[in-house]
Length: 355
Image (cartoon, rainbow, N blue to C red; front, side, top):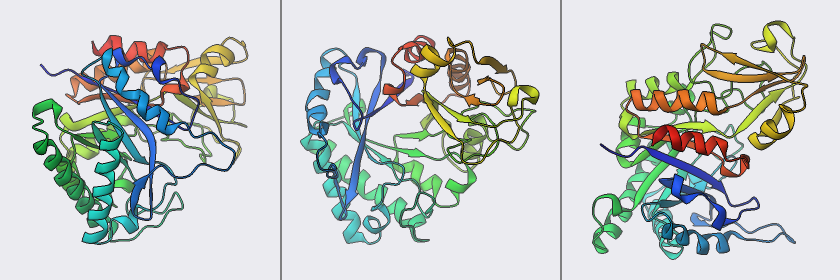
């Protein structure tokens, strides 16, 4: 019986004590982010006056394997608003340059694989360059990476679980599938990280679950993690490669009508908020201002103070997600992002449920 994946994204652009990462609980760690600059994978220059700790982080990450030899570390390339992908994917020559640089970047820093986070091929919603050709070129870009990673594994005599990994973070809606060749993409990947959060995002005007497991009667048009999983299965992605996304942060909206605890009601446009789970658990809930609600349909909690609605994951919702991942024979679960929960209770819940 295979061990379930428990993958953490770690934001290197935030204050980070690598030695404090609970490596024993994890199977995979994605360090975010490297970028694509002039067609190659690099750490983009930091603004003047800011300390750049990213190389120091990378030097420290291999030491985590002294506590968990099976831990796999990956460099995550891209992120929201990260540009450069469309140009790098455009021609056979540019794809070769990109793939060579990505593998060199990985090897020089001791990573075990590469995680692609192009948000999103063929789509310019993040203000990045996009072309219709991205749909096919993304597949070809991944194939170039896969070829080089496999060649490097062969050259080093790596077999089985020791071979270099290629994963990708993907949007879970039809908008994402419209811009890629998902079945062909999945064939190149070891894991497909399903970003089943931000379903109500930073520009939402209605109060809804941003990381619901299932649909809700209060929001029949809303999307859910299970909706995304089934959509991808229908389009040729093996469930066994999919990793279900969890959120270690909440999404909020002000000015929400109080009926039904706010859920499903419109709010004030452009009043969106974001809340680390640390703040939710240590400040907002203890303040007494908020009531916690539970949506039995969606298996999702929310907070409401009469006008401010906050959707989030908590230990109860995470237990349901782990049960779903096991029942659906998914590869496991992942979360964004480790630094959002200083209490440690969300990771502890996931580790306990997947053990």
